Amino acid sequence: KAGVTQTPRYLIKTRGQQVTLSCSPISGHRSVSWYQQTPGQGLQFLFEYFSETQRNKGNFPGRFSGRQFSNSRSEMNVSTLELGDSALYLCASSFRDGAYEQYFGPGTRLTVT
Amino acid sequence: QQQVKQSPQSLIVQKGGISIINCAYENTAFDYFPWYQQFPGKGPALLIAIRPDVSEKKEGRFTISFNKSAKQFSLHIMDSQPGDSATYFCAATSSNSGYALNFGKGTSLLVTP
Image (cartoon, rainbow over all chains, first blue to last red; front, side, top):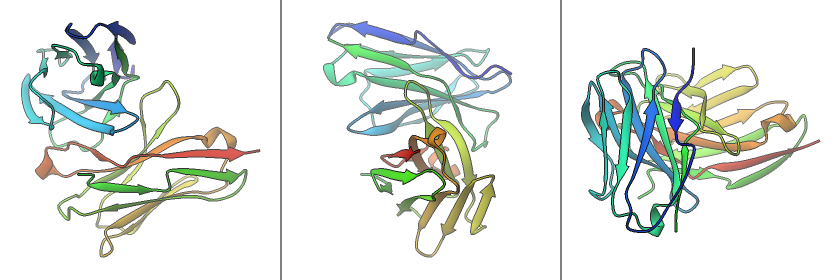
């Protein structure tokens, strides 16, 4: 079974632009979560989607948003990029509602210049 | 604030030795404690996890020890191998928090030949 896939793997954007990242969960998994990983703050939870609904959100500004489609694929969007948004953005999928085990993709490395 | 504290930040162990990484948490509502292994350029991979109703869980060379009263848990890697050299993250979550993973800051493990 294929793992979590994320596209693109690498991205360079300019401050003030916006960006959309994509995540395809493991086949059959219906829950998708997003995390931001930086050297300073470590791994931080962004939000979680299940059945196209955002069920949980971390402590990030409104510039960070996401959505989930009926096939469980998810996208996250960051508007008005800041230099501090440079990070590895990780997507994780879970099999079902209430499943604790989360399986991560390889991430998208975003660099904001 | 950091809900899960992890130590040490880095660790050097000789091949064949035991690697020990410790984590502590404050939130008594946490009921699932996974460990993740991350290699450079990859996403975190679920290694082993434990629920608070057991004090120890072993999978191959990896063991989690859990002390509910002290609110601490640790990862032991027996017979450490150079291929174990990676960054290890402990995490904690609960159904109350919507299964969002709260990560420790990570431990960079180097196993020398």
